[in-house]
Length: 269
Image (cartoon, rainbow, N blue to C red; front, side, top):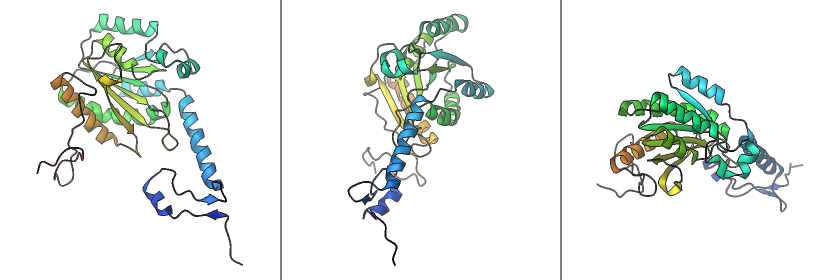
């Protein structure tokens, strides 16, 4: 007797080796096979857990201190995770205590830094705990080499992207970069996003920011993310702007250094 399976394989099965996307899953009758359905439920649970996982800022601060960097712990106006998810506007502003802390820091130590780096849990503190420190090690090497002055690294609980505008404005920073956990996908619960703003101030919208997304081992590498961010910051300083008027035209270095690495640019040869 030959063994039979109720699953009908999809002819595109080989394409699954090239992408984590849910394609060519096959079928059992008119439904998904049990394995594909269980994988989907597991991925969905991972995404939900990533949203609700508490931000382990203590461990991150200790690691940053061991590298010789000052940090400040701040909180948004969203008092807890439940409020944060229901009121995005509160996650974009600091609470009164955090605002006072920044003002006192500037009075005591002064402001006017070239760059303020903000780390916020966003919608995936898992992404922050996994990827923020390895990325920062590469970024801070480049920032030091450029000779830019750095404000204390701020960690914001229950923070949204725009909270970096207030942090940068209060510190008098020329530029801000926020490292934040992106909304989890069903194949990427730990995706880190980078948002860069020149001349930050409260009230700016997304048109004034540049985004580099999907920073993780299975996505954009730490080195490539650093390369693209440094290009944007150099150009922002030269042109004194960021956002939709500042395009990522960085030529990605290749092994043979032949031609531009950015396929969006015309061939100059």
